[in-house]
Image (cartoon, rainbow over all chains, first blue to last red; front, side, top):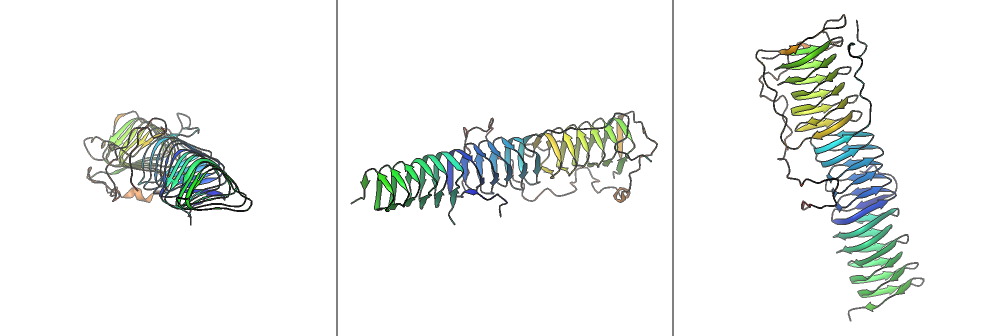
Amino acid sequence: MSRLSSEVSVLGPATRVTGRVSGEGSLRVEGKVRGDIQISGDAEIAAAGNVEGNLTAASLDVSGTLLGDVVASGPVAIREGAVVRGDLRATEVSIEPGSRVSVRLMNDFELDLGPADAGAAAKRR
Amino acid sequence: MAGTVIGEGLSVEGDITSDEEVVVQGNLRGKLTSSDAVSIGPSSVVQADIAGQSVSIAGQVTGDITAPERVDIQAGGRLVGDVKAARFTIADGASFKGAVDMEV
Amino acid sequence: MSQSSIIGAGTVVRGNLEGEGSLEIYGRVEGDVSTTGEVLVGEGGAVLGDVTAAKISVSGAVQGDLRGSEAVLLERGAKVVGDLSAPRVGIANGALVRGSVRTEGEPAPAAKRAAGPGLKPATFAAKPVAKTEPKPPALSRVSEPLEAAAPARPKEKAPERRPPPPVLPSLGKGAKGKKKKDRDE
């Protein structure tokens, strides 16, 4: 069910990694990781997955637990049931209701609230 | 069907413990312990002690290997380290340097 | 029995809005908004100030904090700079947010109640700047006041499984598990 790119590594539900995971390719975490993850591809933390550490990836899809900072060159999706804490930097972050988050979103964009004396948008009569 | 697969481009620095099958095609430096089968693929470079129910080595491993059932070094595989297992095979074309204890 | 209020697209409000009903904002509000009902910041709407309500939905722009005692939902097109807190938070694909988001811990306090029905601006120096009167483009739901009449009655049920806030260790920056919480699979 994962939408990951061709080379996919999997840390199964009965597996625990203490240390750093890095390199090329995508990763689905169904087990536990205590340590940083830095990969070129997509990261997915399945519902049973539990990661304590910083994560850098092309994109991130979380249904499990992630405690740590995230830097993604693409989108981050936090699904229902996920538990996420940390700073998130991504092109886009979506957070589904039913997730439990305490995150700081550090997206760069311009907030243009328009000139002070105009009504919003061009909805004049 | 393997529970855990460390793909070819991935490196792990640290310990991996598992209760399922582990297939390593990437690199590992640290320690690998599983209660199930462990398989080190041809593209792997591993510096770690490995413990598994059975361990199959087709890549390059430096470390001690312990498996109650069996250890097999495949053709093209290379192991520098000690082996402790009930059965042990070294294929033609494999390399091995170390001590062997077959729990006789 | 509260009512719906609407800040139309051509309207600018400078001052705080406080009340018990629900509020739809398509114009511009420079000030804090506080209600026991729902607040909708529609597409094209802008709020410079904090919004406190039972449920807050945003498709427009907000510079300020959003505190929902039930939920805060940002739809595609929303642009928010500020902190979000509510037991339920949704940020759709295409919404842009900069700030902190919390669904854990205490839910946002319910908005304080002002006397009287409907929305009563506290310090209000509203100038309907443009020629239009506060009338939204084409909004049928306006006609019926929203059901969140009684202040303490949640309009929608909180999701069934709302576990108590977990006692998570407070980690700094992605510590390498310096405090582990044991989760047995």
